Image (cartoon, rainbow, N blue to C red; front, side):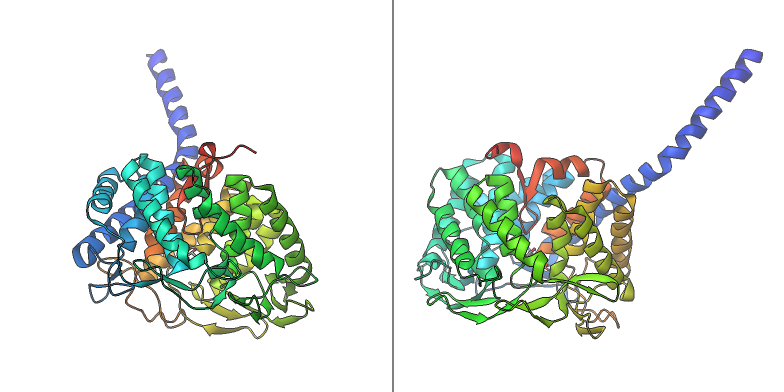
Length: 454
Ligand code: DMJ
């Protein structure tokens, strides 16, 4: 009898101890499962209302194609998230569809930058998950169709290229459009053994770097035929962002020391001239590339990728400080506006299009600092998305973060990036995943162990 009582007390104590630890872990797992369920629901809506098209319009329950012919961007972008979430049946269906039914021999002009990060990046990541030679052949076919864009006098690609004829258009590009190819084209060269892709990408990035000012800053827009700067505003945000992102990430994955040197010199100039403490918050301002004088105290929500880059490149203090500013901005309205003038405390672009950057940075900071507050940030962002952006079939972009008026579009990066970073924040494998992979700017993950050892 006495023995039974002792066993019972012991069991009660054990349950008590567990119940102190378990609820937080259970809650995180439940959130990860909820995110996965929401992915599945949105994917079903895409399949029901937009299958074979580029994107879903969740309010009108219809579809959008970017060009005269569909490029199947949603499934290509969604694939790697399906694999990360273990949605293997959905992933296999996409794989079969892309291999058997998709053909890029289309007489259409496509935006070189966008198809690189979404289509080429998506296909390369599909290849990495499957090692299916047919997928690599698709990726190489697509990469080959992009190459004519790089035949400009400076080596910086034209704004758009015709996938069938190789004709090109658009001499004015911003630096993100002109210099964000090192990663995907480097991976394509690595997988195919053909160096031409990386060489073209590197020439483009190097040309941009070589046009830097005496104080080491670059501008925003450039003429790719003459190399003349058409917009001399220097910043880290929208329209320059992934140029910087790919300097560091490409070095991390592919190990080219010349690219690391460009990154090191660039980040030194960025931190020297663009950091702007304003109302006790830290921002990166816009400045004249020649004088370094601040020209605008404006940020775009794309700039929120920068805490993630600062964090993986080792500058945790600045990453944390900058992320705090974004968290503050999000909490003003419960979603973040696309353009914010922090100098005047005024929203100048009120839309929010389900963008991932602030969520991506919270995920990186959670993994790299271990601080629970970053997971809580993503919990807050997730709950706000559920509250303001979810409708009866999927999620939709927001016209105005103050009124919460809705648009009728779910961008393809919502599948590729936003839901992936949310999920990885809450699943127990999330930290290890960041440690073992480098994400493209579209969040397609690539395993470090398959590439160059530095
Ligand atoms: C994505 O398509 C990519 O991350 C790109 O580099 C810029 N941002 C969008 C999502 O906001």
